[in-house]
Length: 473
Image (tube, rainbow, N blue to C red):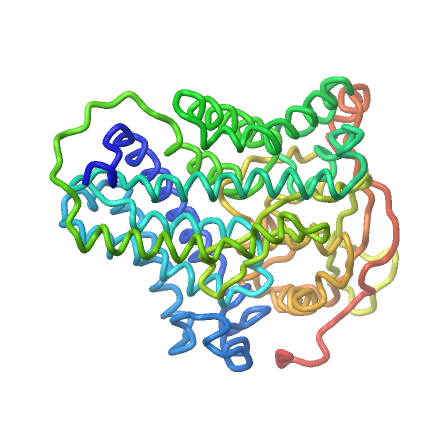
């Protein structure tokens, strides 16, 4: 069955699988280190409460069968171990069927996490990792040549990621059509990186060129993925370069990195593949059946892309097999940040000793330069950006966050860069205030050493204390 495999993509498969395994490792590590405060038994949005009200058919997960923090931690660390084994190449040392089962394990475990993760896991790159990870199950190992149909489906996913993102921009904010969105985006993006200040201060003509290049890469280049080589390789390489530019300009968890990994199989890498036998019949049947199913399910994201009411980042099935993607259909012109402060005073006053909590990634102290965290995902920091956009985004979990800060909850404090209160002396009151942040100018940076300038806007949450010694449910 020479038509079934493409030996010339032997190296393409290898680099893709290594990249996918590395991203799985990052995702499981983030889950293991952050879940207790977010969705644990005593978390802000506990899994047991979620599975009690949402049926398994709507969110298939192992945690519908059983949940405990110890069991969740075991699943997350098991995912880390399997991802590390795949990164080391264990799948090449076992039979084809065993390699497929090995790739199925991290997909199933991460699906279980995402489907109970609620708003903490409601990001497009979660579904993208699952969709790409599911295809990775059927890509085979050293026993067979990479299946042509799976390679095609990977390009199809990449097409939908880029083209959908391009459409949502030109249909959304008028600044994308005027090529002016990047006048603001580097300053107002969810989590700026160490170079974002410099990107923001690039000349405006270059910002317009960035926006135009973005439209070209997302609305024109994706069609070239289905052209013969070397055109397809050139298209994928251009997408990779664009994504690396985005990696430098901000922290977008693993969104840019998984897009890069997704582009790798479209590149015809120089290789000298070993001779292999024809793929076994059972493998051909399984791959073709799964491919037919995925193509049939693709009607939903295609219809969404063609719709004037296109939506971003939505799953069309509970297994996240085929999804729709997109980002920054609207770009903010002004950056707001919610700043949390606590005081040990029994009666809070404006002149009390209010001490500010420091987050790891989101802006806080104007003199603290942004750091690089991506591809690692700081979930609380990201949700704090949404909270600053509107209190409605924070309503399910913000009260729980404040409550846990009032208790000096160790799991919650581990999500922060620094708490201003010692472990044995929690604050009496917590308040939240909304500030407007902007990048300083070159002159201000030289004079003050601060990369941000902030201005008080209004109260976000008045001084709050625990009603009693017992935790509120």
